[in-house]
Picture 1: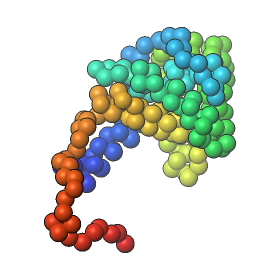
Picture 2: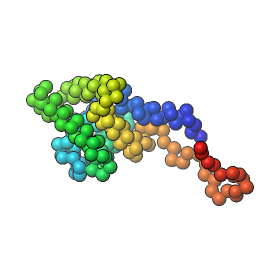
Picture 3: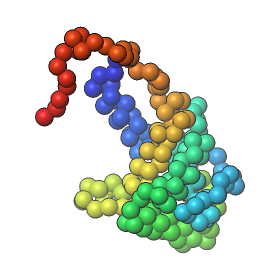
Picture 4: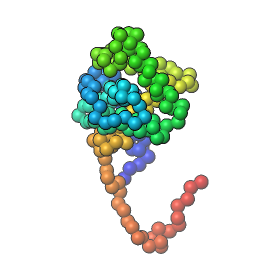
Length: 188
């Protein structure tokens, strides 16, 4: 049976995987293939950039990466259907900044950079994001990492292959007589 300590440990793993040490794993990420899906809320260029960044944050190892788990498509859908205008604006301005910074550094868009250059830019954004959070400010990169992490660990691949998966946690006892249960539960 899952207890609070195990739950917190699992949550810490899920949140911490994408934000700690991802840069070392990212250099092994596969180059960006053509999109196998049609973006609804993002442009094709934004979706390709998101695809590359998501795969750099959670690359394929012995488990599927963000691309195989459908994270870019998940984020595209969230942008179109669920995110607030402020969240969408933050993401889109962050994606635009990535391409602008890549062009300023090398003359190419982000997806055309070498993996080492991509990781260097993402490391800069990660450091900026950490400093911004420490000062109570927002930055696009921690929000993007959070989106990638949520998209990955709520996907089938993330939930069943990257995490320990128990499809039926604990026994189910249906139709139990009320006399065996006693009082009903309530919270304060």
